[in-house]
Image 1 (spheres, rainbow, N blue to C red):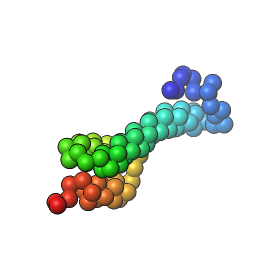
Image 2: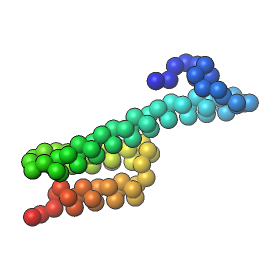
Image 3: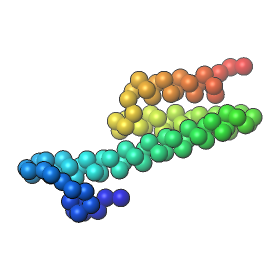
Image 4: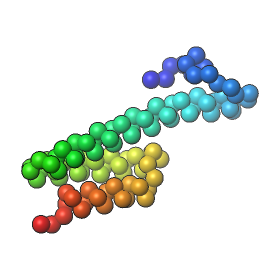
Length: 99
């Protein structure tokens, strides 16, 4: 929740116009990154709950939702590509493995 101008919410110690803009951008991107990470944590908790339950359809749905969200987080630069690949490999191992 960023309001304009950002200088009223966060103290900015910038000296140049570009630094002031960069500080405003940082506030906006930080809010976006926090929202993305929170969503990933929520989906991960839902995935763990589905794994503890016995419903195969729920497991696959939660796994697909989590994998999709991780891919989107990589695309926006919130999560590193290799970290996302590790997370998706774990999901595949537990959810999509053949029994």
